Image 1 (cartoon, rainbow, N blue to C red):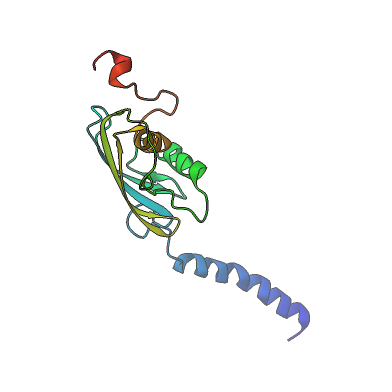
Image 2: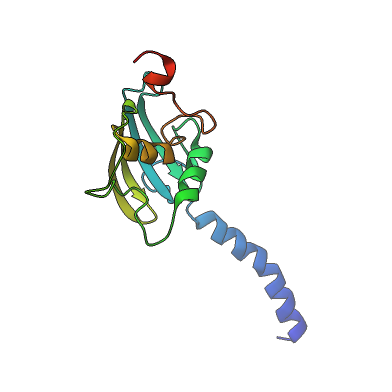
Length: 155
């Protein structure tokens, strides 16, 4: 076969091979357990406004969380490789004894290839600071932190 005919045969076969490969490749699922990326289940209680359980997928953003992209961005902004983003307040940490409210949250799932199983509350200054680090994840507007009962005059 001449070099010219070989080149022509290759040029004609290339689109057929590409179409065949594309037809057999499995699509990337957008929801479900095999979706890929990071997946968190967030359960929020005692907020009076944002209670519920939400699924949050990141990389790419999605799920049932009402602000999925903003929540993923908030998590990414606090991520430091080699540290546990969801680590509890260290034992013996000195904290102000300012009660921030009854809100509680639980996050489980997988982040950066590591399992997550973390509880959150606002029982003192350290826990409130930790809660605020995840404010968008917990459904609060980043620009308007929740007022304490002292600030609202209800306490």
